Structure formats: C-alpha cells, structure tokens
Length: 218
Ligand code: DX5
Ligand code: ZN
Image (cartoon, rainbow, N blue to C red; front, side, top):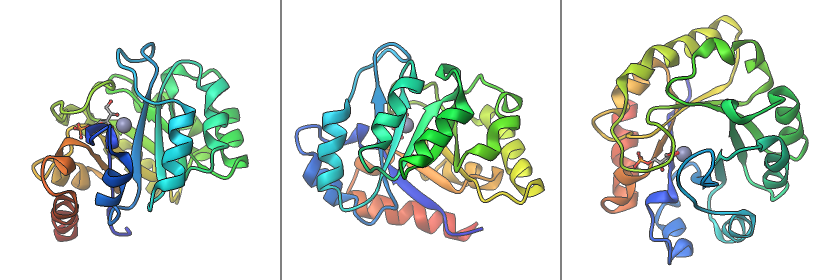
C-alpha cells in the first residue's frame, strides 16, 4: 500500500482566515472541505462561491465532502470548479453510478460516503464506479466527535473487496481521527485520513507530521 494520505478538515480552522489556514496545512495531501446544507445534516457551512475562492488560494488540492440533499443536482457543479475530488453521500443520491461518471467527466475524482449506519452491501455492487470510498467514523454534521470503532468491520469489508477486485480505490475515514485512533483505522485498511480537531488543536504542520509518523510505523 502507498503511504497514508492526511487530509485536514478545514471545518476546524479559523473561518475568518482561510487563506492563512490553508497555508498552515500545505504539507498535507489535500484540504478536506465539508459542505453542509442544514438538511442532510443539521449544520450549515460553505457553498460554491466559497469553494471557488478556496480553490484559487489553496496550495494543496481540495477534497470536497458533500453532506447535502440532492447531490445528483449539485455534485457536478462542485466538480466543475476544478477541485481534486468530490464525495457525495450514498444515502442522499438517486443515481450514484451516473453521478460518479458525471463527476469524473468534469475532471475530479469521484467519491461516495457512507454514514456509520449504512452497511457495505449497499455500495458493493456500485463501488467499481468510484475512485474513493469514505467510511464515516462519526455521524456526519460536526467536528470534534468521538471515533466510532464499530465502523471498523465495514472498513475491513471494503479493504477485502478492493483486494479481491484488484482495485486501487482509496479508503478514507472521517471523524474523530487522532493520534489515538489512526492506528485502528490503518489496521482495518484505511489509507486516507481526514482529521479536523486533531490537526488544528496545535501547530498543524506538527500534528500532520505526527499522524504521518504513526502511520509509517504500521
Ligand atoms: C463531520 C465532518 C468531518 C469533520 C471531522 O461531519 O465530515 O470532516 O470535520 O472533524 P474531527 O476530525 O474533529 O472529528
Ligand atoms: Zn468530512
């Protein structure tokens, strides 16, 4: 497996200083941007004009996590902005495979996310259409929640699927990832780690380096 990817979530950054905050995480693989619409989740964050501007100033690629209703309508528009990846929730999508194709056609990697309660078998048949799978390790909506170890069997199923199908799909975890929990997710097969509070609680570059160091030992 390639080296672990660390994607800090800017949900934990200073919202008045995104240009500076993105610069503070420039050693990371990508900046994870949580788009919430106050319907799919009870919280509200950024829309397209904000993403457009972040895309202009960011020194690293943008990894969008859409926690919104009707991604069939909106995900292609986000992909159009030139971002690195667009991940939508399976639970909200009507035609996931068509949507994946449309995201890819706009030049972004296509990702699909599962809430903690959504079983792997709901995506299994469609997984070949995607570049990355996001296994939520908390209920989506807020940063700073506790990592749910009970989601690890699902990650193992996904890793096993990738092995069997000789797939290069990236397996991402998001929520409560820290120095204490990253090992568990690595061991279960994750290769891409979203971390918000764990990165921004201290000096981001140092926290990113610590997470990488732990991952390298596994
Ligand atoms: C939660 C978001 C996460 C969040 C993670 O709905 O999808 O990306 O920012 O934050 P931490 O790492 O603090 O759990
Ligand atoms: Zn997220």
